[in-house]
Amino acid sequence: MKQTRRVILSAASGLALLAAPPAAAQAFITVSSTTSTENSGLFGHILPIFTAETGIEVRVVAQGTGQALETGRRGDADVVFVHARAQEETFVADGYGVQRFDVMVNDFVIVGPADDPAGLKQAPDAAAAMAAIAGTGASFASRGDDSGTHVAEKALWEAAGVEPAGGWHLSTGSGMGATLNTAAQAPAYALTDRGTWLSFRNRGPLEIVFEGDPVLFNPYGVILVNPARHPHVKAAQGQAFIDWIVSDVGQAAIASFTVGGEQLFFPSVE
Image (tube, rainbow, N blue to C red):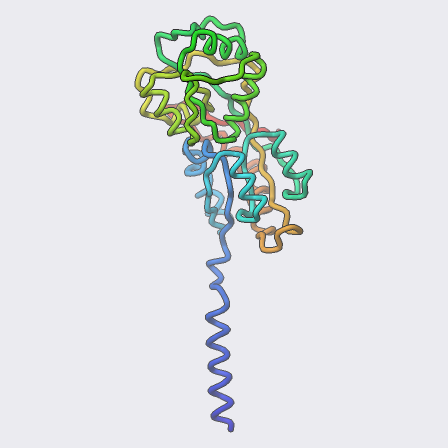
């Protein structure tokens, strides 16, 4: 009987070991984030610093902001890190996120052929620049993917009084890199965040043709997915990431990221 009992206990212990995930497997979080943080190289710069300081690995799901927020709504991420403030605030108000924190800012620019057929270099503001593109029928490559950049683009078309349609409006349904590739091949104008543009190498005939309008300001926020809605969310580790990225150390890491000597993102936290 004692031998049988030992066998049963041994088998039960083995099953318990198989069922329990190793401790190391728990030391990670999933961050659903806009493609610009990944494509620009920012995450490649700051995440190793965070992991070295905390022991928490960050696994990034890079998507357009709309998709990133939807990933958070499903509970398939612990943290969302995106750049469409109105959508972020709705995400929190609807109970999918705990609280939004400002992290950093950069800006959008309009890139296009160096010969600038729509004359954007002379445009007084961003709305006028978009109206000039539509008015001349110059090709424009749009992400068309409900990303933060696409949301900003749609706001600019609305401000310009334009409903973009027709053969000149090229909706890629893709990320920023793929959309810039389309613009370079066409060639066409495109709206892009400055960080991705500075990291983009396949520019072809494209250059920045319009920048500097305050409406092109591009703030990023970070939100913990609500563990009250999705109990499996790694709330402690996710909040540790948020606390770090808005801390002096995290903000300094963001500020220290440059491409070609140019700073791409600017901390939001004073």
